[in-house]
Image (cartoon, rainbow, N blue to C red; front, side):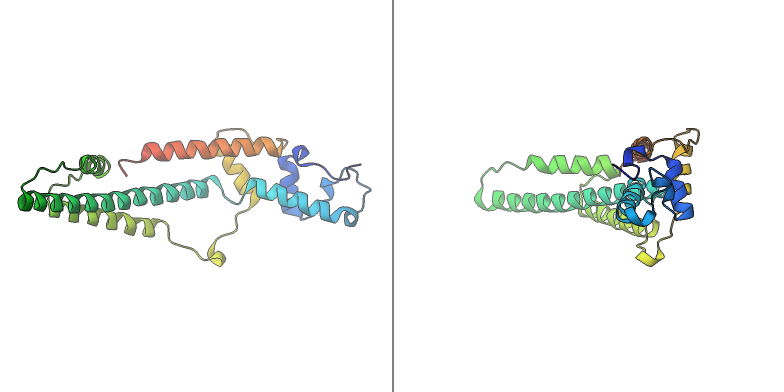
Length: 209
């Protein structure tokens, strides 16, 4: 016989009560069961509940997702910079070989593709060494801006967020009325929908990289 509620039976009210009272009595199937008798099961259930919700409000989720997108864009720019450097170096050597050996060498199709991608993402067209330096400066600016917007925090510097604030932020973002009787598993789906919505909004807000 199961003495505690199962995860699929847990409601938001259960989660908030546990967070505010620190007492797991309401997670018992029957009021007369001693907590000590099922302490291990209750501890495991409580951990599953808090892990399922996570520790981020919608605002902090937006920040985290924006941070990931910023890192990805910088990685793309750095990869393009390396690619164009390699291709330009190859083009220089090909031109030297043409002069020395009086032979025709086909130029890399990759170079045009890389230059087109750089122009698409940054508006910079690589035609001269000055353009390449401009692209390099653009990447440095993006890196500096990323560090300014998303400073690294030590574990003890990260603020503790109240569980109720996390729950309210999801309902507010999704313009849903607060419902403490909602099943936890349903709320997790709602939170996942909110995260997907945030990602789409942030991607749409991005101009270039």
